[in-house]
Image (tube, rainbow, N blue to C red):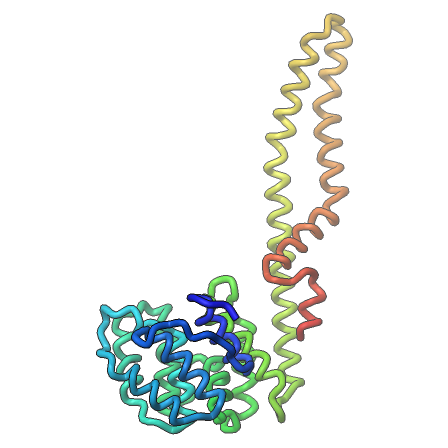
Length: 293
């Protein structure tokens, strides 16, 4: 396993995918990440005493808005999971969430509000976060099928490009859990997924068309510049009649030919643009949307 700062995010990813974490906890005892990793290990090993021991160390810290550690998303996720799993007192973590909310902008509050809702046994907030924490805390059975369908739609709507790494990992893990959940109405899920795929491909097609015409517009001044260079060459021709004849036909033929070639190859050009868009979204071809469904 990696050492250093990467071990923290790597262990969290393994935690979400229910893969035993294997690490050399080289963080100092005074580093809160050391205790968070120990809490994650305790959750995976169903060791309430170990979790409570390290939770107690963390809770001795003073909750202060000037302390960066209170904004550690991995920490509050892991502690919330353990507190729910082992049915422990949540007052300290709820206070921490309330303090975070006073310092966060609106776009950042939803994650913290969801953690707070979980600590109060509420289903409010982001459903995809509710699903993964309740699953890891062994309280997943209380979620009805319609809630899971709505959580799945939320996962599909989540903008991977805009989310941070923690949110991306949570969304991917939550999606996997929902799809594999027993008793889930797969017909509704498949319907939602197909609607998402249709909308996604439609938007990619519109964006592809826009990019194509944008490239055409860019090519116009290039063509004109080339024509000007050609005219400079023509001016050096001594035969006046030949010069006028070439001038009369070169520019129109060149422009028509270039335009014809661009639009003749339009389907191929748009296909290449589409493939680039899908690669940007992590797919090598459009069919992978269906493959991963």
